[in-house]
Length: 357
Length: 100
Image (cartoon, rainbow over all chains, first blue to last red; front, side):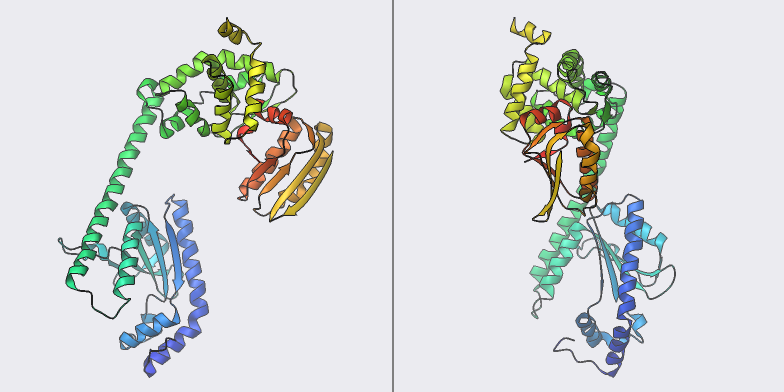
């Protein structure tokens, strides 16, 4: 217990009950955490953090010293077990709350939405507090739900407010309020931005689906949607047929910077890049694989050969080939040897002869 | 084909020496079993003295990669010759692994 805390006999009795219950409170905290985190996972809600704790003896002693008489028994103290969910977005606070309602029994009399306590012209601590109980019964516990920015504000505010025994002057308290207002605005903007981007992704997916590829700028999102159309499958299967190879699926997203470095701006450009280079990419793959008995390929093979051919046709030479491997696999001297090998093998191919002439 | 498994600085090292062809693959598969039982450590496959790799060898590498990644570890390939690197490149496997 803290050095300066003095408890009356009632406080001491409550403290003794707390000590006896501590092991079961630890179990409750863990169980509640597992129930909530698994429910959030099932609903696909990603949060910044879920924290839980059993109130420390020092902290309880401080509370009992201040307002011990308010509690008849240890059961009246609802934050002996506390859990906190910190979300990315304000909308997610309400989603987490809805999920909490479905997995715990909520004591509505004790629960409080601090977000609604402020006057229209005041800003401050924003958090949703539920007092919960496991569906199977047992002691109550507190669940706090707030955004990352609300969490930062309240942590700093708590740190400063309780650090010294000097009362914070009005002008500085007002600065805290102003910051809270600003963070509320930022939280809203993040939520709005998420909504705008979700709409944008939906539009891009629809354009890709309708084949209006020239209208879709090449980006992480659009390229991912484009890959759903399996644009490299045909060439992969053609290459795999050389040795009746199986195709092992891998992500093609690491090739996006390579395509961008070629100056491809829209998905239409990527589509033309495939159409214009497929036959030569097949020739190059054939020249390499036909003399082997390699019967397994990664699904990146087609795109890799397309990129190599694009460089060769645009006179990118050894440095251009090396740049592809450097971009995909990280810079390495060994990539120069690979580039040399690719260049040497390509020299005999018809398209290289045409370029040479 | 000789396979040696070592532990070093918390990583698992598999030293593969000789020709990793179809004939050798079963024996190698057995010898690398400790890699499958690993618990999230990084795996380094030392290919300094590897002379050849077939599709069966690539499948073994893939198995190690899948198992190690699933447990949160990384797989690094070390000391690979230009010829074997070419096999990784022509199959697109070069995009799957990290090389040291």
